[in-house]
Image 1: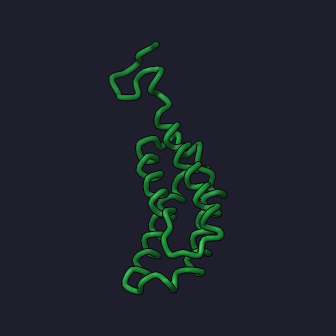
Image 2 (image 1 turned 60 degrees about the vertical axis):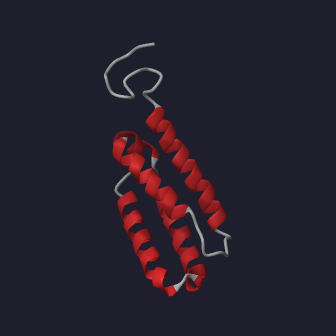
Length: 115
């Protein structure tokens, strides 16, 4: 095993941990998007998954830009807003606009990553 820095990922075994977490997050988002396409309930985990992807992406920016595909992000966004149009009326009014605003902000930030 080779050690090449003092960073937590500064060895051959750990150097791809960030990439693995990015891949896991993207896979989880893909699975959630598929579920969300037919969901008729007001609860959804997609925005929380995107928030976690963004946290990891900020730390591993180069890998995030290689792994996140802008056309997929657009599909995720479209799927979320389709769900919101379909179910948003059932979200309590005091939360509805805030949820949409959170989505707008998260997707805007996510769109700064990828290729």
